[in-house]
Amino acid sequence: MVLFFGIQFLIYQYLSKFAMVWTYMLISLPDSILMSGTFVRLITLERLLPGSNTMPHQSYVFAQLLHLLPRYEFQRIVNKYQGDYRTKHFKCWDQLACMMFAHIRQENSLRDIDIALNAHASKLYHIGIQQCPRSTLADANERRDYRIYEEFAKALMQRARRHYAQTELAVEVDNAVYALDASTIDLTLSLFPWAKFRKTKGAIKLHAMLDLRGNIPAFLTITDGKVHDVKAAPPVPIEPEGIYVVDRAYIDFAWLRSIEQIGAFFVTRLKTSIKWIRVVSYPVDKLLGLRCDQEILLASKRLKKLYPGRLQRISFRDETQGRTLVFLTNSFMLSAETIAALYKARWEIELFFKWIKQNLRIKTFYGTSANAVKTQIWIAMIVYPLLAILKERYHLEQPLSKLLHFLEVNLFEQKPFISTFYTNACRTRHEQKVEDRQLKLFDL
Image (tube, rainbow, N blue to C red):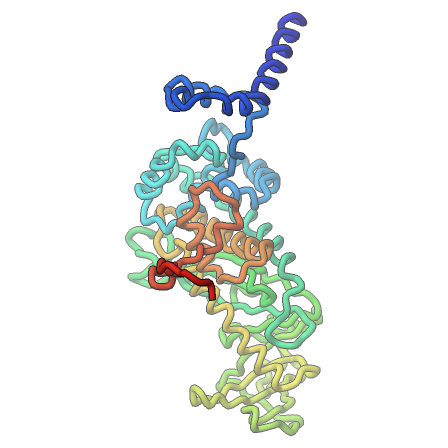
C-alpha cells in the first residue's frame, strides 16, 4: 500500500512538471503540427493535467441564489416537522427550490414546471437539487406540512428586517411604524370546497403587518375568507413605543385599548357612526390641509367602558381627491401633520399586496388542497424577503420587480451573481463612432 501511494505521488510530480514546461515546448512546434489532430488531443490532455491554467468554474445563478438561504435553519425546521421522513430522493429542499423556480418564472402549471426543469436537467446536479415528475411535486405540495415553509418564511422575514433596521422612514419619527391590512384571494368553490367565503364563491384571506422600514412583513397569517380583519388582529405582536397604522376595519376599542396598555400607539380613521364629545381644541395650519385638532371622549356608554381614556381627533382635507379624512389616535406627542403623514404611509401595505399578486404565483395554484395552497403562498413569502435581502446586501438600486425579471432570464447562466442585475451597454449602429478613412497628408 505504501509503495502504491509512493508511485502515485511520483507520477503526480512528473505530470506537474510536464504541465509547467508544456507552454515553452509549443513555441518551437512547426505550423503543420499545430494544425494536426495530434496537437488537438495533446491540448485536451494538457487541460486535464494538474497546474494547468484553465478557466475557473462559475456557479449557476440559481445555485448562488439558493446559497443566500440559511440551509441549516431550514433543515432544523424540516427535522422539527419530520418533513423528510421516509423520503429517499425528493427532499423538502428540492420542493422549495422547484416552487421558488415556479414563482420566479411565473409557470402556469405543474406540467410547465416539469418541462422547464427537464430542459436544464444536466444543470440541476450542479445547482444542488433533483428533478422530479410533476406527480411527485404535486404529492409533496399536498402531503408535506405547510408549517415547514411558514416557519422558514417567518424566520427569513426577521432576517430581512435586521438588514433594513437602519433604513430611514418617509415620516420623521423615531418609533417603529407598522401597517396592518388584509387582502382576499378569490378561489373557485367547486375546486376549493374547503375555502368557505360566500354561497357561490370561495376565498382565503391574507393578513399582514408590514414594517415600514424596508416594507418587510413582520407578521403574516392565512385564514378563511369569512374571517373579519379585526378578528385576526389579537395574535399580532405589539411592541412598546411602536406605532400601528390601520384602517377603519380594525376599529375594535377593546383591541385598541390593549395596544395602549402595552405602551404602543395606533393611528386609524374614525367611523362616522361613532359618537364623541369634544374636550379641547388646538389651532391648526389650514394651508397644510388640516381642519381641526381635538381631544375627544367616546360618548357611548358601551364604548366608553371599553376605552375610557382620551383620544386625539384630526381632520384633514385632501384637495386632490376632494374628500375629508378624520383620523383617530392615542398619541398626543406627535403633531397633526405627522399623524396625517403616518396614515398616508399606510398605502405601502396596499402596494405590497399588489406587488405579490402581480409578480408571484399566489392567484392561481398548482394544487387544490388547503395544504397545497398554503405551501405555495408561504414559499412565495420566502421569495419576497429573499429579494429584499438581495437588494440590500448588494446595494442594488433597481426595484424588486426588475430584480425578479433579471433572475427569471438568468437562472441557468454561469456568471458572477452581481453581474446578473446589470445591463450591458447597448448602442445603435448610428451611435457608434465611424472612423474617417480619408487619407490625411498633414496632421493639423
